[in-house]
Amino acid sequence: MRPAQAAVHERCIAAGLAILCLVPLVLAAIVHPSHDGVATHTQLHMQPCQFLERTGIPCPGCGMTTSWAWFVRGNLLAAIYVQPMGTLLAFLAMATVWIGGYVAVTGRPVYRLLNRFDGRYYFIGLLSFGIAAWGWKILIHQLGHDGW
Image (cartoon, rainbow, N blue to C red; front, top):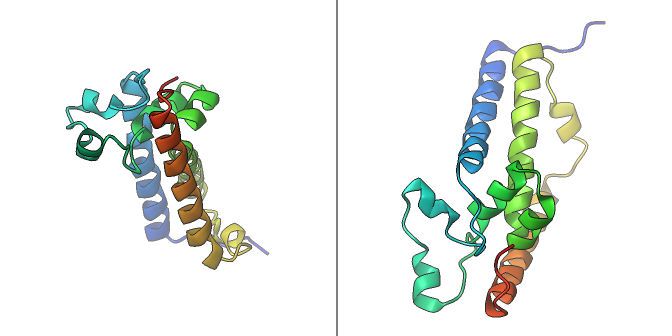
């Protein structure tokens, strides 16, 4: 019996997801990680974080670009330290590039792997981790040890 093959439109979706996740990884490789732990995104001509500037407290996204920049350079300790959620998202993006590319090229679906995990727990786990990562970012910022 021959294994199931993904339809052409499914392979195109997989390729699109892979490309969509590859773009921020490439951008992270272009920028240089800020040693302050924040504001790496300003190298992409984006505005500084208004939440941080007005409150003195990092927003939930503060440090994400810096974390991705460290991640693509292979410095996982710095990436995790600067923003743990950013590291997780960068890892998921990298996995999506590889898995999406695999499905697009081979046509072999990976949904059977995803069916082994109960999706109800993804959201709660990711949300909890994101809140804990934000708390970590606030803590290291308040202590003045925000950067790597």
